[in-house]
Image (cartoon, rainbow, N blue to C red; front, top):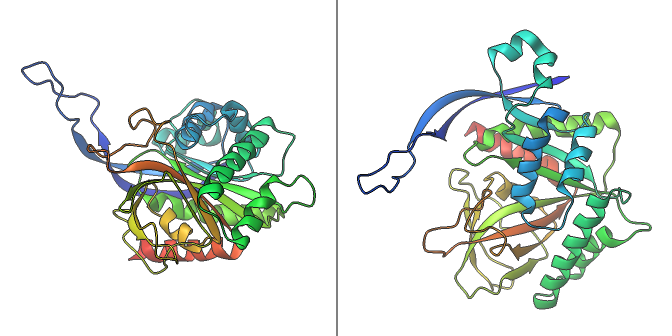
Length: 315
């Protein structure tokens, strides 16, 4: 059934019609402010295209079967949600109104990475292992970080790791994430699904002020106590004082999640974005490069993240 969580948000959306200048070139796209009710629903087959697009903007050209991954998410309809714009027709027709194709604006769910029978899960872990190997050879990880990430590759006696996916279209405000993460934790408890660790892949941009090696690794999260959800920008400093980067989070609330993580590593995806498509828009001068930040954390850290997120929303 449709989920009951709803958030009324004001957002800027692009005007579909762009003005052409006298010389024939297109001017910048205009925007207008609209009121929208975003409501969370259990994923259904009609959401396949929208979910697939959100996964693609996260994974880009990674060798992962996104079609199968989309089906995995749809089939576990008791956990996770998609965000759509609520309409009067939806309210009148209820569940039946959700059986047709509609635009999906966001996705919050969790995928069990121990499900090796699925090709997409094996591919995802193989991709992460390759990236992990490349990064650790350049920037050695601590023993704690190695132990945490090594759990992903073990086929026997491995800890159960849940991949939390938090994706939405550009310019959808972070407030939409608050009720979604609340529901996610409630649904996990109701399903009696126990994960030892959680993993997330965050979309970030970095401006390296100390020379860009294209890789970095860390044994712990960023400095706590930072706010600034509006810009999503943060200057991170490793404990050894090296590699100071200016980081911009595509989903600004994920800065809080990074602060709670036990370990992380970053890998550059500038060769996969084709000039900034799929939500990885670069600055005009190219000073910011798109990265993916892979983090691991436990249930207590996830709950701390949600507490912080609620606090920021109420500020």
